[in-house]
Every structure is written in C-alpha cells, then in structure tokens.
Length: 114
Length: 111
Image: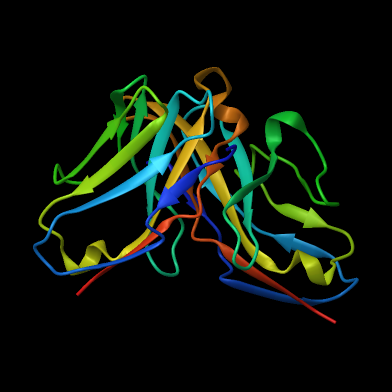
C-alpha cells in the first residue's frame, strides 16, 4: 500500500497512562517525523528518525519517545500522559535525499487525555 | 529564533475574487519555504514549494527575502479552494531537519 497510514485514528486515555501510536511509512521512505497538532494550531515537530535512529528532536520532554523499524514502520510513545497532550499526532515520511521536497503526511491519530 | 507567522486565522472571499494568504518568517539562514493545504476530512498535503517556482491549482508564491514573506496568491478563487492553508519553513540545525509551521489560515470561498 502506498502512502502513510496511522493507527489508531482516535484514542482516549486517562491522565498518567502511557500510549503508543503507530505509523506505516510510504514504501522506501527511510525518514519519518512526528508532529503534534493542538486544536487551532499548526503542527509542531516532535522528533525525526532516520534509518532507525533519532536524528532530531523538537522542544518535547523525554516522556515522548519513538522507534523506527526496518520495515518502514514507526511508533510514538508517550508516558505519563497529561491533559495538554490531547492533540492530533501526525506522522510524515520522506526520502532523506528529498527531504526538502516535502513530506508525505498520514491522516493522524487524535488523542484525547481525560 | 526561527518562526513562521500567518497573521490571519480566517480569510473569506467570494468566488472569482483574488486571494492572498500571508506568511512571514524569521530565519537566519537561506530559507526553504512551503505551502501545505488541508481540505476538509483529508490529510495535510504539499501544495507548493518555493524552490521549484511552480504554480499548482492556480496558486503561486514568491519568496521576498527583503520583507521575509512568502505570500500565497491566486487571481480567481474557486469554491474548491476552501481549506486550511499552512506556511512552513524547512530548518536544518542541531535539532535535526524539520518543518516549522505557521498557525494556519482558513480560506472560505463563498459562492
């Protein structure tokens, strides 16, 4: 399947819990980035993985962590959830040598923390 | 600090009217800028990038380094242009390669 797919589409968690969000990158894309989009705001960069290693991080605490796997899938893990973590989480993939030709975004996972 | 500002949260125009979505940026290096669009119930997708100087769906955007702007323009708006538009700046620094997005402008084209 081409394109970027994310799961689940919606999720409700309780404050203090842990959550794992999943992303399947476009075939052949070796770079994956995660963004958080709060309601009414533009996406904010969380971190980026290249060939299974983190190679960039935005202004997010360590309780936001990730993994990238050889099959182009990746995960975003958030520990000790806070109410402010409620947002749409976007995964985006690209080829490293075409990074600034733009990402391919997934549809996102909407996380609600109650 | 690198920043992208879209001063208008909402822009409402009539079909056939010209459209200009404003974007200003602050960046110490040579900027690489993009416009992304999100139609209702669809994913965020690339509209155009300044490096390629292209026109997509009738939209164009010119980088003005003097004014640090990258405004998106279309001479005649269509109803199907109604969407959220995000201006984004490509950054490469110690924190990695990333896009910094503006807050977005919702364009509503009325019949």
